Each structure stands twice: as C-alpha cells, then as structure tokens.
Image (cartoon, rainbow, N blue to C red; front, side, top):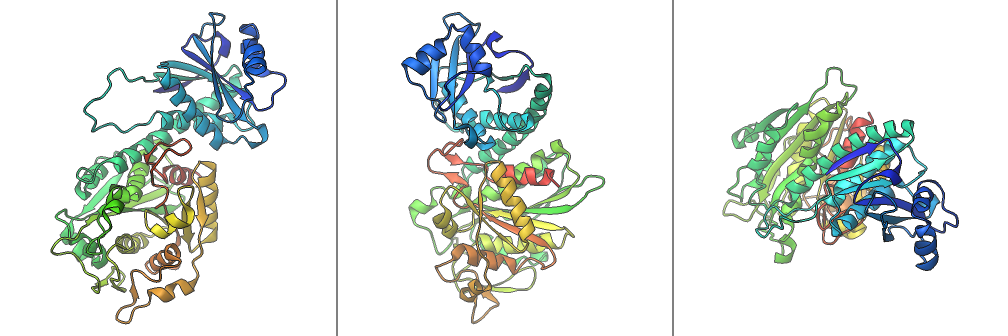
Length: 493
C-alpha cells in the first residue's frame, strides 16, 4: 500500500472511496464533511443522519453511494466519537478499521480527510500511516490456497487543502510508514514457526542489516565469555546458541543505549516441561529479540544521534539428553551463582548474561524487553505490559512515550522483600521464588546482573506480545510490541 498526502480538496478526488469523519452528537455539519454533503445534495444530512439515525459513535461506519454527484464511487462516513475523547491512539485504531472496511468492498484507492483534529498534523500523518499499514497486515506465508484476487488497497491518500498542514502531514507520514514497517518486520519474525526462526536464522538476519556493525558469538566464544546461565538453557537443544551484538554508532552520539531482547526461539519448558496447550504459541518467546532486530533494521533511516547496541542471547529451551536440570548450579558472567529451581524460568537466565554483557559496553542506559513471566500476563492481561527498573526518570519516559504511541506499560513494584523467595541454601539465588509476585521477583532477579551506576528498565511483555484474538488495531498473532516505544524513545534523545 502506498500512503501519500495530496494538497487538494477531498470532494474533487476520483477514487473508489472518499472517507469523511463525523463527530458524535453533531447537529450541524461543518468543514470537510459539510463540503462533501453539499456536493451530494445533502444526502448525508437527510438520509444518513436524519433518516438512518447515524450518530457518529466511535468506529461506527456508514457506506453511501455517490450517484455520480462527485468523482468518487462511494463515501465512507466514520464515527469519530466524542471530540474531547479523541486521541492520536484512537485515530490510529480508526484508520486500521477503515482499511479493513474498504478491503471488504475491494476498494483500491481511498482518499481521506477527517476534518479538523486537535493535534499537530505531523502526529496525524504518523498515526494515520501506522494505522493504515497495521490494518493491512496479515501473515499468510504458509497458506497454499492463496487468493490471487485478494483485495488490496493500492493507494491510501490523505487530502489536505491547507498548505502548511499538508507539509506537516508529509513529514508525519514518512515517519509513520517507517515505524509501521518496523512493526511488520518484528511481527513477521515472531509469527514464523520455530523450525524457521532458529537462533542461527536470527543471527543471519542480524548480519544482513545495513548500517549496523554485527558480531555473532558462537558456542565456543560464549563459553570463553563465561556465560554459564545462557549456555545452560541451550544445552538440551540440537540448535546451537548464538549471542548477537549489533551496533549503530553515529559520529557524535549524545547518549549510549543498549537494548536487550529475550531470544528464546522455542520454549518447551525444558525438563520442567510445559503442558501441551501452553506450548502452542511458544514460537513467540523471541518477541523481544524480534523487536530489537526490527529497531536495529530501521534505526539508520531515522539517523538518531544516539549510539545503540542491540543484544540478543538466542537459543531454544528443550528437554534433550544434555538438558540442564532442576538443582543444577550455574555461574553467570558476573560470577553470581544460580540454583535452578525450575527450567521453565529460562528467560531470566539468558537475560542475566546478556545484561552483564550490556553493562560492560560503557552505555548510559540498558533496556531489556522480554516475554518473561506468566505472572505479568495474569496481572495485566493483554492490555498492558509490565515495567520495572532502577531509575524512575527512565521508567516514566518509557511509560509516557509508550502511551503516546499506543503501547501501555504499567509499573510494578521492585521491593527488596521479593528477593526473599529467591534465596538459595546452596547458591547466591534461585531462578524462581514464591508463586505470588512472580513478575516483580523476576525483575529483582534481573537487577542482580545490572551495575548500579547504569540506568536500567525491564519490559515484561508476556501478555501483549501475541494475541489470541483481535484487539484494537491489531489482529490475532504477533503484535510487534516494543517497536513503537523503543524507536520513539531513541528518537526523543
């Protein structure tokens, strides 16, 4: 789909569908919709609003024939809801809904002008582009009965007759297209089956990223770096582990940030094996890694003056004959020892060594993103991810930027008392503790592998990385969570 902006008037456009917006409880039409209504001989006023009682509730739609009164074939009227409650996030979601609607009638070119909105046109352009491309997304790579005649929107055109707003929309669209494409990159990776998205494949993808220096550490090199926790998790699989380090380095960086993504390409639970039903979507346990790869793939196109290190400890967690066992004692890169209480708490073990490595790079901040705990999923469901860390300013910034870009994060406590359940009789700590407060206990565990002087935030995205049913602008499956937040956070530095 090509997304562009046109400096013109909406009613004059020759296309399959014109899209206009109607605020809820509107009594007298004004602006763009009034102009279109006038060209239609007041069809919207007399038939849509008065006769059919269309009230403009949020995401409500009404499809109207034009009877050749304007060049377009049809008019789609979309409800904007209450004006005071309309936000950029609602606009993004609405545009995804619009694309799905016009796909159902096989429209190829649509022109849209929703009228005067209460936020900057550059923001409008960004979220419209994101919403349209998110709404178009599907993952049908492995379907043999592909419909060659499947409807596709070829052109999604924002129409704006004000020249100043037009220029700002162009800037916003360019940014939104890049972010949406980065999300698609991450979603495709996380939707791939584990037989394809192996640690080796992730390493190959990382090596092909332009504008980024990439080093792949093989098993023997990982052993030399003494990453005993990461290596233990990989032992039960025939797939070799890969430790991936990507570097984006501008000429004069203002800051140095490391982003660490959990890269378990399939999680069986190890010897503490999961129930069969719980394994069905465990291909998504590398959603954090997919996010990091997507950020590193697209970061050069934004040219931020920030040095960014993308780090992934990639492996499978399998119950093979050499698998690590409950009761084993592991030594992490920083020499801390860990008693294995449960082999299905493997993500924090791989992250422990990755965080140690990140803290040795001389960075100012470390942000990790991981499908880490079922406890976070139970606590927050699929509406928000958990966030913790050792620096409130960093946490607040990530929450704010996430919220502005359609990704919610809810701060969970990191009281030192949560470590009580992780205490071991034979090692420095266990990898799991008491059942209650599991997400916070995992955060406390990870903190033991982060240097105190380095700002750190942990994003637990277990509940939001993969959806069992459509939600807001997203369909069932991988969501590409974290891409919007991390890219916008890096650009804001």
